[in-house]
Image 1 (cartoon, rainbow, N blue to C red):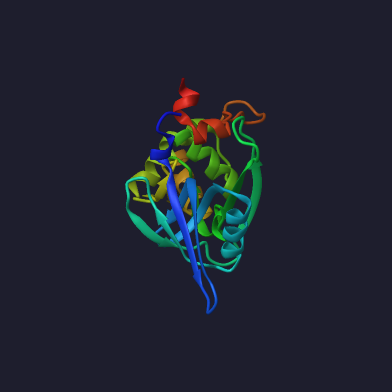
Image 2 (image 1 turned 90 degrees about the vertical axis):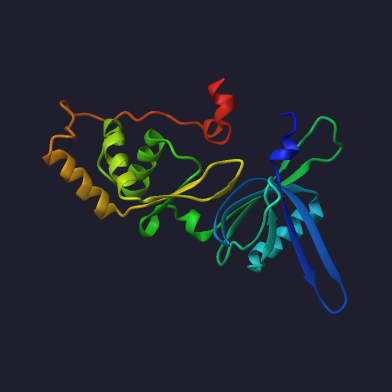
Length: 216
């Protein structure tokens, strides 16, 4: 946890009326975004700051996001964003730190219209997610072949991220089914020899958000 502040971003919200000017700044530990569109925003601060940021998200406000490297970008979560609030108790603080997780409508319906956002890209994880979100018939052994096709088609795009390395996979259910069919016809893919449930590997949230800790 040393120098953890160097991996955090900064979110700033400023609102001016005839009578008052409001400026709020909170720290960002996770972010996923595409150009000016924010898909996931995880921030923490005190009660009043988190309350104001929550209200601003629902008002479709524009924020200024500063990345750990110092670059800045104007962002918004757009319409129909969802907010989830919680609290984190720390041993050296009398009052808990307030936490807000804001999610865009697109991420809330992840996988719709052939767009799937991942917190990081690894073939086995990506394939398991696509099978689940797109409602595909598949098995774990097909990951390398199908994801290889997706990579060759140039369907994987890196997104802006803080605390993760997100990507966007652009592929519809119909397209992936066609690639699976091609693989079966060419015998690059094989159907399971025995009937029964498909056993998928398990991936924990800790592995997704802290891959270096999970590896250790």
